[in-house]
Image 1 (tube, protein in one colour):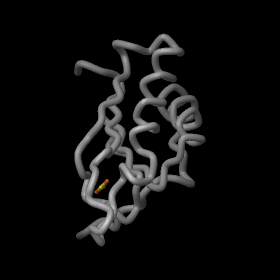
Image 2 (image 1 turned 180 degrees about the vertical axis):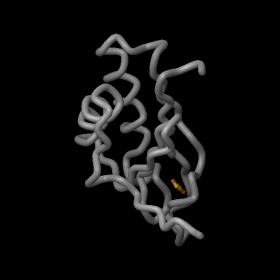
Image 3 (image 1 turned 180 degrees about the horizontal axis):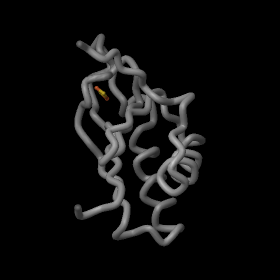
Image 4 (image 1 turned 45 degrees about the vertical axis):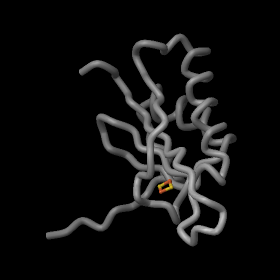
Length: 107
Ligand code: FES
């Protein structure tokens, strides 16, 4: 595995009149930049990586973020949440439950 944690932040952009909306209109570029900056500050460059992503297909829950390898999804992430996700989840192993997307399991 190349990275201990790999974080994808949707920065998809749609025209303003598109009914689906988009994460870019909800500040996700700044959120992606903050993830990169805060990981760097903590000396995690090379261990953990934040990448911008295209649409993650949960537009109504945006800005959306997904963390691998565990496949934990976060919804309605704001700039203020970035440090908490890094410190609690990525470094501390404790998922930020209030932002987590709950999936219905089938079967
Ligand atoms: S635009 Fe971000 S999940 Fe679709």
